[in-house]
Image 1 (tube, one colour):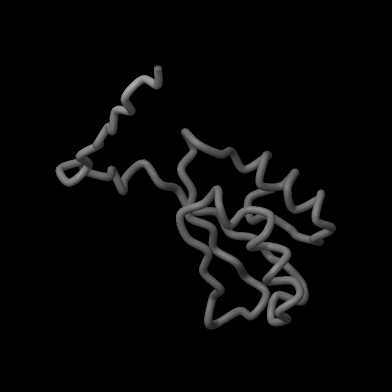
Image 2 (cartoon, rainbow, N blue to C red; image 1 turned 180 degrees about the horizontal axis):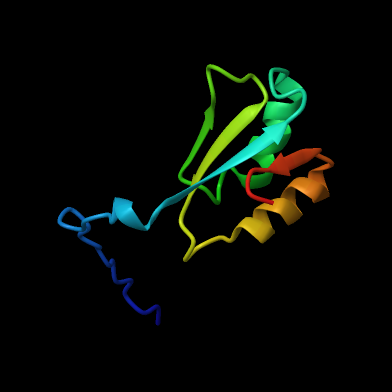
Length: 92
């Protein structure tokens, strides 16, 4: 005899995101204006970070908004190296 299935509903309507917990890091990546490099970046860290911003004043500057409780800068660096992205992080 088959057991009846149970559905679980999660109500997250009243959850509040703490935007203060997100940090920003600046990366300088040559060739950032090309779609190939942008697709590599998104494939490497797109699912792990909150926001990816390309600076309007500097075509090679990428601003990454991330949650330090979820991902670290060294892991982002590691993922960039795995994808073969040449970068320089501001502050290093």
